[in-house]
View 1 (tube, rainbow, N blue to C red):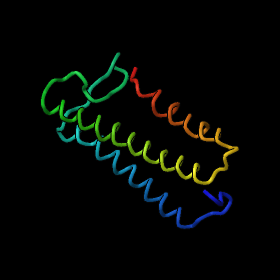
View 2 (cartoon, rainbow, N blue to C red):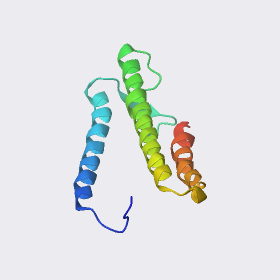
View 3 (cartoon, rainbow, N blue to C red):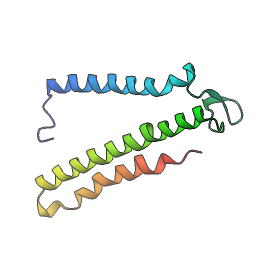
View 4 (cartoon, rainbow, N blue to C red):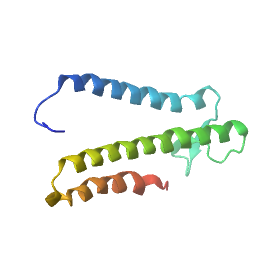
Amino acid sequence: MMTPTEADSSNYRKISLGIVWSWVYSLAWTLPPLFGWSHYGPEGPGTTCSVDWTAKTANNVSYIICLFIFCLIVPFLVIIFCYGKLLYAIKQNQSSSTVRSKDVHVDPLYRNFLMPTDYE
């Protein structure tokens, strides 16, 4: 953050681990319906497939609750935590004449993570 023009070779390993973790986490939550925990089915006019949101079985409801918690709530809390740490670091390093810069960094949080949460 302090020297943005210098490449940090240790970041490549962190980035690679983050990408691998993202794939593993997504597979962990998309594969269970293929093995019996809930199931996939046609959605809307039948042109796409998704989790069967309408089935009321305990198997299906438990999967949807876990999806909601671990694929929406937990990632959202991690994002909030990271943005909070970023804003705290910015606040510690900025002068009093640039207080408005905080608004520029908070806006993407609202625009990118709060607005697209409604599913149409």
